[in-house]
Length: 143
Image (cartoon, rainbow, N blue to C red; front, side, top):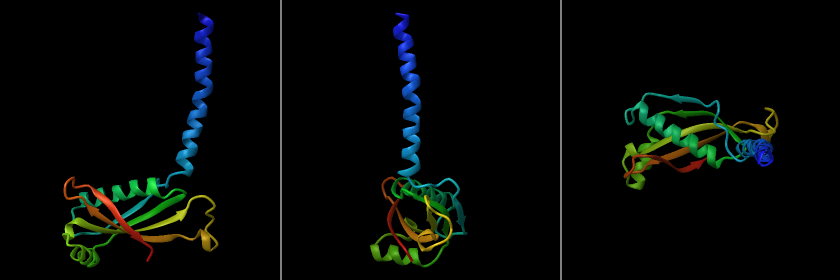
């Protein structure tokens, strides 16, 4: 009996580190990186600071899951007429659309030089779900 329980402990001690290493590998290469994001938020007439932070958090989660191999460096919100125009075109309210601009780089192989290693910017349009009140990424574009 003692031999079997010792065998199980040895098997668990062998398999557990392999599983942990596999999880680290998947998290390192198959997700976006959002560890040190500099979030810049200006005053807003449309949104409270909490609403903007919720939208920024939703965008960070989206980036983590959908931008593998890239690192989000900066996320900024500045109020402008653009969200109001967009909301008017889609028939929504200005309070339901928010636009962020981000700066990101390719995480692996980034050395700061060369055209493929430059920082890139992107505009993100988030729309608030009318039923749940949660922010969802609608579209993104490179300026």
